[in-house]
Image (cartoon, rainbow, N blue to C red):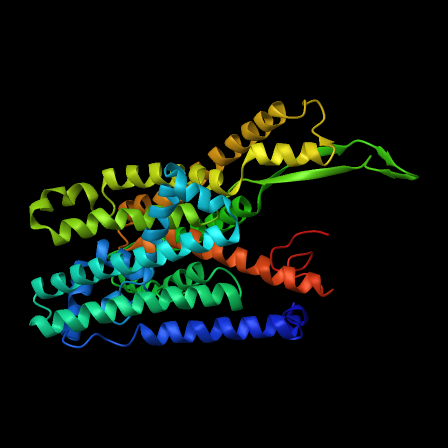
Length: 429
C-alpha cells in the first residue's frame, strides 16, 4: 500500500498537481482565520455556541468555520454555486444560452464569464445581508465604514475562492470548487466529534447512540461508494465491414451508464438553493413567518430537499448525457444493441435504462441526505448533519472523483493502479 502511495510523487506532473492542491488548501484554511474588522469575535462565538444546529451551523459547515469567525471567506463559494445553478436552469430554457453551450469551448467560456459576473452580484447581496444581520444581532456597532469594509471583504473573499477553485481544477487534482467544499466540511469533523463525545460523557446522550453512529457511518460510506461507482454496462455489437483488404468491426464493446451521473452535484445544488429562502427570512423581517417552514430540519425543508435532489439528479444528467447523441454515435460507428433497432429505438432503450438507474441513485442520495435528521431526532445529538447526510455524500463523492483522477495519471504512465486488488477501493483486476 505505502509503495503505491510513493508512486504519487514519482510522476512529475502528478507531483506538481498534488503539491499545488495542497498549497491551495493551506491558503483556503488560512483565509478562514482572517477576521473581518469591527466584529465582536467573542460574542459571535457565543452566538454559534448557543443557537446550536440551526441554519448558521449548516452554512458554517460549508465554509469550514469561516462564518463562525466572520472571516474573509465567510460566504464561501455559495454565491458561485447559486450562480451556476441559475445559469444551468437558464441554459435549458433560453435558446441563446443553449446555442452558446452547443458552440463548444468558446460558447462555454462565455457562459462561464456570465456566471462569474452573476457570482459578483450575488456575493454583494449576500455580503450586505450578512453584514446587516451581524449589526442586528448586536455583534458589531455598525456604521458606514463597517458596511463598506465588510461587504468589500466578503465579496473579495468569494471572488478569490472562485478563482482559486478554477486554478485548482486546471492545475491541481479534482474539481476545485468541490474540493474547497470538502475541505471545509472535513475541518469541522474534529469539533463535531468532540461535541458528541462531551454529550455522551455528560450523560445527555446514551453511549448506544455513539456506537450506532459509527456503525451507520460505515454502512453509509460503503453504500455511497457503491452508488458512486455503480454502473450498468449496455452491450454494443459492431458489425463486420470490409475496406479494401482489411476487415473492421465484428467485436463487442460496452456502453457504461453510471447509477449517479451527477456525483455530488445534485446534493451541492440542492443545499445551496435551500440556503436562499433561509437567508431571506433572516434579512427581511416581514418574511419571519416563513421561518418555521424553511428552517433547516423542518418537515417542509426535508420534503423540498428530497424533491430538489431528485430534480437535480435528472436535470444534471440531461445536460451531460444525451441518449439521442449516444444512439447517433453508435449508429454512425457501425454499432448496435443486440435485439434493439438502431436510431430512435436505441435512444429510447438507453433513455429507459438511464431513467431507472437515475431513480435508484436519486432515491439513495435523498435517503442518505435526510438520514441525519432522523438520527438526530432519535438520539438527541445536535448538529448531526455535520458528520452525515450532505456532508458525508460530498466528502465521499469528491474523494472518489479525486482518487479516479489520480488513478488516471498513474495508469497512463504505466504505474500500478491504486484501486485494483489490494488498493484503496478493493476492486479486482
